[in-house]
Length: 477
Image (cartoon, one colour):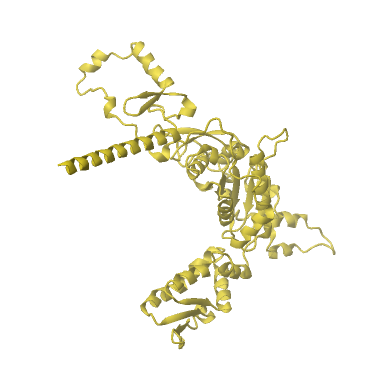
């Protein structure tokens, strides 16, 4: 009997401990996240101190006062409401404030100095940032150098903030380069190296406020989500807006340009730095989503785009400038210039359809080169996470060694050049040729090594298979 009593006591203690743990967790969550008004959905930092009602419902002073004003003004006749069939008053005990965690806003810590995400004393110098980028990105030397310096200066600006009366300007960037040249990959690698929040968004989905599509403020909302709804962390992050060339002004259009010039106009305040009210946990503002204010003053904006037909505009400008006479340069020399994008000017971008105010807020403009055959071969084998290394690791898990002939690499690069989609074409080509190999090898445990040959890529032969007994066999030859 005594043993049963002890067991009951132990179970009661465990239940009590569980209750305390749950209460402590709830209290910790309350301490970490802001309260949100049940009626207007504004957080505590915007609406002020909340009034706590039963069942964890919070109402701000403004909404509570409006409720009292309506009651006292005599606009509502409660005696008449009671007589309406099917009319019931809401019981607050039956209502729960259901705000998902991803829509809660983290509190700003009071009486603590704002700490920069990147410590100025441990901020890597530009040459170190570029050296890290070299490990992942092949070529594009000028672009990597420009990005390294711009990011280094930006985070020095964030770290020093208002150290003295000299205020450092933002170093927003505009990247111009053909598709598949590594624009997005550069930004992703950079954010991973610096360990700062990164939001990647597409300009094609943006429209002027009030129209179907994402509002311009949604790019900041995505960064807030990447920073786990921590406003201070988000205010020091990076936003990469891809396909920026798609919001160029529409030419000869009589309709309202809601996804072109209007978006550029709306983005001016974001690029410059302003207080923006953004929804938490959603892309658009609505009655059920809490709002918070984010200052974009210290957010680094990087815009990128392929800008098709821009090279023709540059050639047209250069041909007009070509002089006439024996010493003059031939006009057709620009048609063969592979580095024509490097000669871009702000006048070319304005002619393309970017408004001057928008370009003025992107002071650092640089271009990425189109990839050559040699660069594609390097991309296949040199970066830390090169495509070949990924396949070699996959086959190594089956205890099979995978090698590629140098001729095979060049054959793959030539096929990729014909597709004209940059480095993205490499993966598609290798997937096609590796499909049968990845399907057949797990069937036979005797296979020890596979060599991909030039003949296999060109369709005139097959890969070389070496068995574990050192016997070599050519497939398909």
